Image 1: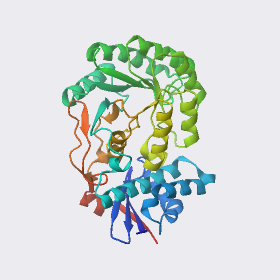
Image 2 (image 1 turned 90 degrees about the vertical axis):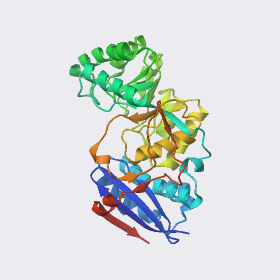
Image 3 (image 1 turned 45 degrees about the horizontal axis):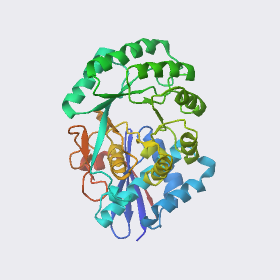
Image 4 (image 1 turned 120 degrees about the horizontal axis):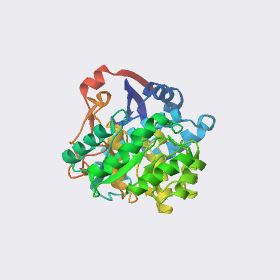
Length: 364
């Protein structure tokens, strides 16, 4: 069996990949959301030729060769493009064997994955944000939530400070002590300011402090982690394995958060999971929307023993992720999501998406 065709279907922020073989099998994957058109272009120009004609069972070898072969271009878009091919190949192998992808990753560590409700916005007032989180808890039984503080890459943004200092205590007061609350700064602080904010989070019993400093400044993040007792989380923006090795090895983070689609797919995220397990660091993949990324991440969290903490589950409904695929209902009940038992990812593309998306093909 070998790969004969790599097809992409592009609609806005979503780029779906379908891989075809000479035996008629098809696997479904997705490049990273956001600027998906660029990732699709990279896929056809730089990635596809390294997989066409190859055996799908060699997926991890092929991903490694592709990334090493493009050593002069080891940037984010290369990894985002490779993720589309990689995730489609894992789906194909699952369909071939009649097993969910989680089973192919070494076995299912948990059939139900505990998740926390993750807010993705900062435009709300403190009162509005807590109301949204309370509603999510009531509807889905979340035992943990995450809210946004500061400003994205904000350099201690003064305008965001007032919201943060009002939101942090209000959330604890209204959600109660039994709810685990996490805070995500998206690189908004210098190390000195992040330490001040982190101490406030500690005072109110928050669970973790995510990306306190710009991800490009690992030393700043390490300073924050050294100064605080609250666990520091990070890694969603990173994609090179040496970066993850350094983050884990230097103690810059207590919780590692690689993104399946940013890092290059399942073959790459498995390696980060192994690094984390060897260092006894919690593994909580980043998952910011309900595209196919959510499906991929659910399988990973179900399979990796080190994914023992609550996993991220967006509380937002985004228009651009709707109408792409259908699957067994991925529903949060009592704060848990059950892993579908269908082969591969357990999803099928919607016909309207297939017929309306912009199609491109690379062939053998």
